[in-house]
Amino acid sequence: MEILVKPCGEFYTNCYIVDKKIIIDPGVEAFEFVKKYAKPQAIILTHGHFDHMWDSKKIKEYFNVPLYIHKDDAFFLENDPFGYNPPKVKADVLMEEGSYKIGDYDILIRHFPGHTPGSVTIEIGDEMFSGDFIFDGSIGRVDFPYSDPKKMKESIKKFLQIPYDKRVLPGHGATTTIKKAQKFLPMWLEYL
Image (cartoon, one colour):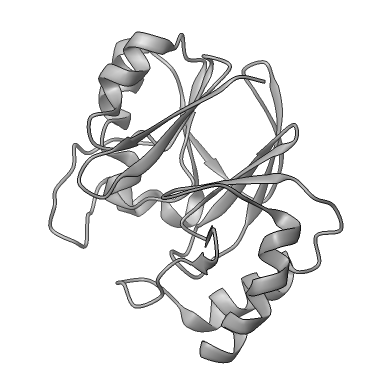
C-alpha cells in the first residue's frame, strides 16, 4: 500500500493519500497535493474540525467523489465553532462504527469520541489513521467546543482493548503504533 502524506496549512494537518485513491483529512492547501498525486475514489474525514476538512468541497466537486464522515461530526462541515469559516460542504455518507466498502477497499471505522463527538480511526490493511484522537506520545485536546474529557477517557479504555498491532498515522506529527500507544495511554487516564 502506498501512502503519501503532506502536512497542510498553519496547523500542519496531515493529509493522506492511500494508493492514489482514498483521501484522508484534506486540510488547507490539500487540493493541489491531491490533484498532483491522486485519482480519488473517496474522501474520508477522521473528524470535522476545519483543519482536517478545509479542501473537502473543492476535491469532492473537482473529482466528483463521495465524502464520508461520522454522523456525530457532520454538523462541523457547515458550522465551524472556531470562526475560521472553511468552505461549507455536505457529506454523502454519515458513518457509524463498522466495516465499509469504500472504493476498492474494505475499511474498518472505529468510533472514539472525546476530541470531537464523531472522532474515528480509519483502518485500511495494516494501517490505522487516528486523526486527532491519538498522536505519537499524546492525545487530542479535550478543551475545545464539543470536546468531552469523560468520553475521551472511555475511548482510551476502548483503544487499550485492541488485541493487535498496526502502524498509527495521526492527524499531526509522526507515526506511532497501536502497541506503543497502549503503553503511554494509561497515563492520560489520570489527567482526564
